[in-house]
Length: 524
Image 1 (cartoon, one colour):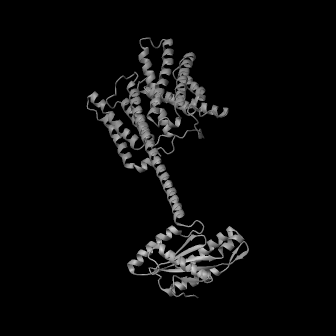
Image 2 (spheres, one colour; image 1 turned 90 degrees about the vertical axis):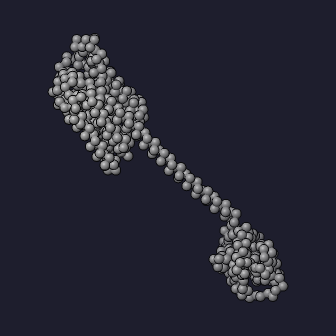
Image 3 (cartoon, helix red, strand yellow; image 1 turned 180 degrees about the horizontal axis):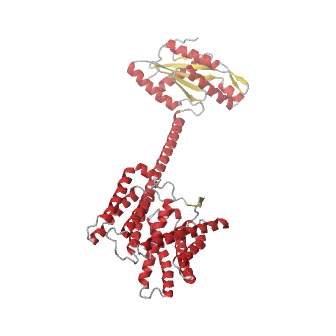
């Protein structure tokens, strides 16, 4: 997501995946590649030094309020590693020896300080956090800001000591010159390093600008208007006009929160550069002050504004990360709840099946059959209807079980259940009572002829042979029939009536059916 401050470490097209905090990304580079890296560092350092010297000297502002090469040195030490020290040293040495015409000994000392400051600050930062997470939190931004001050302090100590040794700076002048030097290098690092790291992201604008283009346009226009007012809308009251500079910060802070730090920071650098250029060209409330000296205001403003943007961006990123983590946690919890609910439903289904269905045949068991009987009985009473109950017992089942084994008996029971189910209607209930005993409820079937027709079909399908392990199994069935409410008004009485009728069927020769009691028996 574009709002996140996460950076892809690339240098010269070479990907350097970060390991643990403090691991130099250049640790695995070959000697030839390190040489090319250092040549690139020397050239970039030299070019920035020439441009900075030329630009600030043109406006009689020297030493420079922002020594840009110092910011580049820290960026190179962070993104490449301590292996850049030869390039940093040589770039600084050539700058001081050629551009500033310092003797070799003094140029060497200042170059050593510049190299030591950048490497020491970068290594401290690496030991504390990953480069790709440097601006991802308030704590990281605070540490990074402190390390830029450390960078400036080291270079200032070595530089001012060298100037004192040369007789350029006296001891009473040393503290103020030290502060100027430190602020110049620290502000440059605080400005250049975030810009360079953020700029190297290939997606630093796209997504959030497309989603919030109106807010981006309003924030950008507000920053431009505030800058124009500071440079061109002076009232003559320098104190009042100087306070207007904070108007520039407001839209940038809003952009950092609503869009991303990666988008707000380049805009901030562009606005700051335009204000510096306008001020040095004679516009705005700060033009004309300290001409020919160190314009420390720019360094102080850079540190203050940069730190504000980075801290707010880090806080916003922490909030986004926390919100994203909360959303992820909620989704994970929802997924767990859904999974647990599905598991509970499956357990419930299995328990229900175990409670109401026969484990062998999958048919309803006695408990479910009693519930269905109660339902059919209540419906029959309301309508004044009758329904039949068939109690079925397989003939010769014990003999088959004993001779062929329990596997054959189980297979016969399953096959009998299937045949019974396909013989009756969908609304009829086929249940297994246990052993080789089955029960069929025939709702809304009280006509004797209809019941006997069902009995005939049942006897026909159950007398058909079955194959088991290549052996033919033959059986038949006896059926006892009871009618509700003629032969019983409760489950117990109906079952007892059907059981007595079944007994009569078996005593009458099996493979037949009988009605309950002394009623005339029909047979087909």
